[in-house]
Image (cartoon, rainbow, N blue to C red; front, side, top):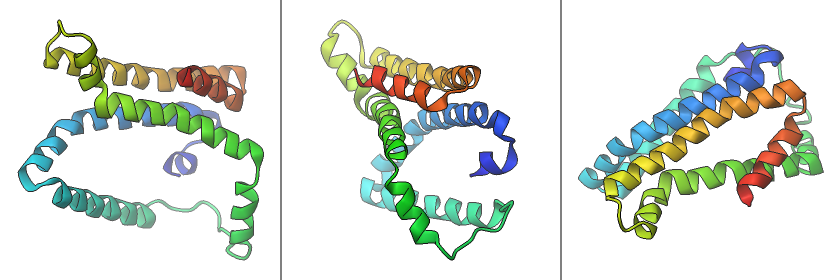
Length: 168
């Protein structure tokens, strides 16, 4: 929303790729402190704390991000139903989920344990650095894919190909 509101359509893909890279980088940096928080106060309290922080950020974004044009609330639910019944929209969401789901599940969650278990000659610290390299690759790839999509002016097809390649 912030990208769509503050940048022209010509820069949307690039800015979205850059925002994804920044999000990956901050997620990678935040994994250590979050792990310490889980260990110090327990995962249930830490999860509630993260939920409250996320809620506060959502409320802050709601009040600080301005709307450029007035939204019509008259046919809101009809528009939502129409959007959810479009095949292309559902296909793009599925392929986007294949892109992000694979990265989040492997790169953040269990990559270092997996690499450590299949390569007995490396240390746990080395396997964690390999997981960081995977996330860095995704971080570099996000703006690169946006550049390719802008260059060919075919965002859906490029995203579809990326989703299919990662799913394989």
